[in-house]
Amino acid sequence: MVDLNLLKSCFNLSSLKLQVKLVDTLDSTNAEAKRQIAEGNTQDLLIISSQQTAGQGRLTRTWFSPKGGLYFSLVTSPRLGQQFAPLTSLLCGVAVANGLQSLGIDNVKLKWPNDVLVMEDKISGILNELVLIDSVESRMVLGIGINQNIHTSEFPEEIATRSISVLDILERVTSPESLLCSIINEIDRLLGIVETEKSYVSILTSWRVLSGTLGRRVRVDDGTRVFSGYAESLLDDGSLVISTEVGREIVTMGDVTHLRSD
Ligand code: BTN
Image 1 (spheres, rainbow, N blue to C red):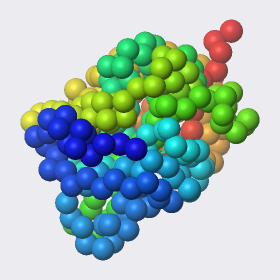
Image 2 (cartoon, rainbow, N blue to C red; image 1 turned 180 degrees about the horizontal axis):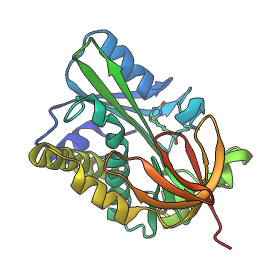
Image 3 (spheres, rainbow, N blue to C red; image 1 turned 30 degrees about the vertical axis):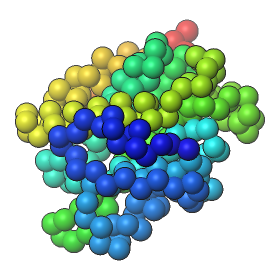
């Protein structure tokens, strides 16, 4: 269980004014975040749960959420307007990668749009949702799950082979407060950059440096078609440019699989 006082004492925030809610068990921290928004909570809010009974992943998948992992949702306003909401996922990926690196984990890479990998295995997933309140107002729910103090050998077989955890890599238990705090402080810092520069350009530059997708052969499933190609670049709206045998494709949503180049 996260120690709330320890957590609050390490926050160093300027962009976020956080209310923190710590729970032992929830269905999903994203679902709870959306309930709070529906009840009229307009504050920046951090919801943390020690475990989730119905953790949600992207594309209607589930997120395996036993005790030992880190599961949280941050609710805040979309910076620079709703149309930039997809870029917040990339921002969160950068923050999680930096948080993992601060624990001493090397080879952290980002897979478009929002998976965090170590040695090609998934260590963290991000589920960001835009919640419209009325025609002008909206809130962002930034949901982040990290395989922290649990061995992936205990995961269900179908995900164990593609997953890795902080415990697998470092072979020691690490502090959830430290990891959570460095990620939240980093999200706050990156949001501050977006506000100052009125642009996500710096965030995209950091994402490109951390990317494991750019320069790779990939298979794309955009919901309507599946095709393969070479991930050429990331555009300033966060979409991925794939060069295929028949020309260029611009992917704005969907699922990417990294392929071996041989
Ligand atoms: C994915 O990789 O498909 C995204 C996984 C996101 C999981 C996190 S855990 C905290 C938050 N609450 C949820 O129900 N999902 C996100």
